[in-house]
Length: 549
Image (cartoon, rainbow, N blue to C red; front, side, top):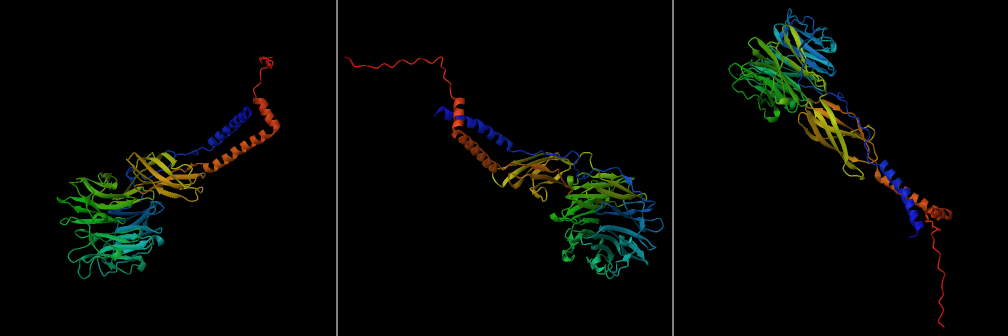
């Protein structure tokens, strides 16, 4: 190969290689800047940490020592009903928007007791037992007219109706249940009605022949199925799927009285109650419908009585509150939940009377509210949020599973502090600037300190900016989405074609230049080796041989 041609190739390489390197470096895989959530970026539920007791500022409540109930609406307003026994026993209502503003609900001059409360469609409903003309009747009122109207709904030909409970379904239908003796047999039965018939249609749930059914508890499921639990000597359960025809026995204490059930209508159904375990001691029990109503003991007071349990479920966690005898002169409000399988009984307060009934409810963010009456006062205690966030992100990594392949899957690795029991983590992603989001459940586990998991983002197209974030759900059902992050990987297939075009363009340009004589002569003179004329040896004269003569 001539020296000129060799040098032309060297020049081409010197020009093309830097261009190739520059293009490759500029389009290498890169993550755009990622913003991790700040330490206090989001807060999930605290579940079990409670603040100090505080007294609700209700003016001179004159409260009956046994009865106060609570419901919380979608705006986190706490609605409370209680019995004022200053002169006669009357039903009084107040709420957390202004506890000093109270409203007398019952309008009959005789005693009204046993209130229950529910909220639906921003309307508050209160039901109670009222003494009217020497009979005990079930009466209902609601906030649509600020409790001006009292409607008697127990038209079942019984002169003694008691133990009412109330629930509201997602359609705004109000469901009421109570106990009353049958007018023929005289045995206590459980009765049910609802607002769809303006409480005119009354259904008898039970058919007792030898004892009284009493203390019904009612709840509505997410599918608007009505669930009812009650006690005779045992705890029983029925629901509206077959018009309450199939009655199941819940308790497994055949020789001991089981009383005061409370029910939560989730899947499965949970029922709690008090039962005598011998030696004059009552304990709190719990059962659910998923395991043939297997009974477990919740309270941990082997020598003292526990009564009046109330149950709620938020997310996947069951919460139970009850009252108990602690010492001969000291009673307490106690609490347990399913996070530790009810092993720990938390003392909420020592300011209570054993026969008092506490109540429990939740705000929309999972904060627990517990109230109870004591010494003519209503006390409250709330769960508190910790000073540091319950769950926060530690690490996030996205890795393409195959390079330069259209529609490849991305592996996502996430790590989070797990101070309050992560239930699940979902990765969310969008390729249209967040207009719509897709989700994928991540697979992982936590140990109470950290949660680590892996997920997949399918069908990622190179050259598209990917937005992604994580949705964390804790065991109380509280959700929060982390700060939005970005990922970008170039479409190197298209850029490789561009690079080849550039390369051929450079080669074509050099070739064209080389074909021009002046340019070729220039490169030839520039890179040709100059001979040193001063050292050049003289050529020997050519000698011609002649034939010998």
